[in-house]
Image 1 (cartoon, each protein chain N blue to C red):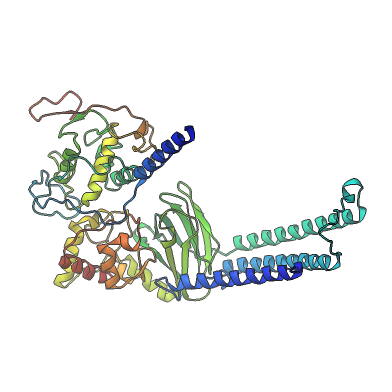
Image 2 (tube, rainbow over the protein chains, first blue to last red):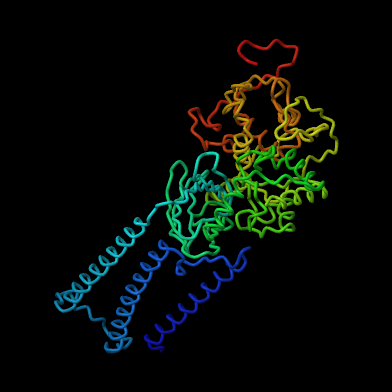
Amino acid sequence: MVPPVFGLCLRLVLLAVLALLLASLSDYALAATPIPQAVHDALDAMGPQASHIASLWNVFLAACAAVFLAILAVLLYVLWRTPRADGGDVPDLSSLREAEPGPQRHVTRAVVVSVLALFALVVASVFTDRALARLSLADAVNIEVTAHQWWWTAKYVNGGPSDSFTTANEIHVPVGRPVVVNLHADDVIHSLWVPSLAGKKDLIPGRSTVMQFRADHPGIYRGQCAEFCGYQHALMGLLVIAEPPAQFETWVQGQRQSATEPTDAKALRGKAVFESSSCAMCHAIQGSLASAQHAPDLTHVASRQTLAAGTLPNTPQDLSAWISNPQLHKPGTNMPATPLSKDDLEAIVAYLGGLK
Amino acid sequence: MKPLIVFVVASAMLLAGCEREARRFDTPANNQTASEQAQRASPLQPGASQGGPVRDAFRDKSPYDGNAYAVNQGKQLFRWYNCNGCHSNGGGGIGPPLMDAQWKYGSEPAQIFQTIMQGRPEGMPSFGGHIPEDQVWQIVAYVRSMSGQLRKDVAPSRSDTIYAGPPENARMRLVPQPQTPDQPTPQGAR
């Protein structure tokens, strides 16, 4: 017969092993993404919003751990103190007939302590919410993010309409300046979560929601759709690239330009194929005949780090593989495979590869 | 005996349900016939124009007539490719209505395929080479659901946008009347 204390300890050890296994699994999953160095960690806060949330998490963790340990200690004490019963003993049911004032007092005390502890956590949560709402929004960068199955549109709307530009699946933000993101959804409910910068926010069709954050350190941060939105929910990533303000301005100026006009014959052929085949039915390249809005804007696609919302790294080989069979890399994506000759495919890859 | 019948009927319904929602994630084969004989019937093409003829339809029916998922994809593409820009939600506007029984260029699936691929005079652009053929078949299946030609469990039951009319799966099945070009156009129809 195994003593109950031993069984309990065994279960705790098993739980700890399971938690470690899950943690290493998530590391393994992140290492398989195209940009494994992108920071994706709610406890590794890189801005004020994420650090408020991380502090609240630490308070909850400490409070819940203290309660858990206290309950375990009481449980172990009770197990140690109670005399063992034999198999043939008649159960003691005396408490069903008469009141037990002692245990009743214990229960009352425990209820009061629990209510007070929970109330303290509510207060901590309210203060965190206030701190999140008090982010200074002076001189903010305004971005409209629209979620689609399964990618993101980002439209920078600072300045007038002629200064706004559209990109996809990758946003750049200046370090130290607040960012206000207006969130929309095109089809179903999505949720945007960049753990190192801010909390989750849902994107709901027909509604507009707002997310505010600030990045205090330059770096690449990984975001992810955090609300199940269909078959390729897992492959719906977003990169946030925080860079010094001067570098950010250079990037903005570059994004406002139309696409680079190709010069060599191969890329020129690529442009012609792009405009006259099914690519132009969904994609837009500013400065070309392609102007549809149902797929990522490719005006500066070569300046981005990933393809298909964080599915593949942006290399010519991966681009070629993606165009020739998208369903192989992201089954269910709305991009169809386009039948292209080898020369046409190479020409399109050359053209898109030149769109810095 | 009774549980056995219930089991058989339930299994049959489940299997039919799978078929109805089947999605294909492979690359569908393009039109199998190598013949590119159909001439484009419209100078209009989306994006940059392609020269040369388009392919003939190589089958009589859309492979997606019984597939609810593909018909809904067709409905999405109908909006994405701006078919609704002229045909509205089937009620017509700049282009003829698609939810009625008057079909100027034929209402058979292969004829609708040809109309989309070749284009038609007076404004219907030629989409051959611009829309992948597999997607054209999805659109063909959806367009037929507008006048109730598809099974009710396959036709779409809701729209992504605001639409006041009955959904496709609640429409009466009309019997489309093909018009031959030498017939006079009825009043009010184009």
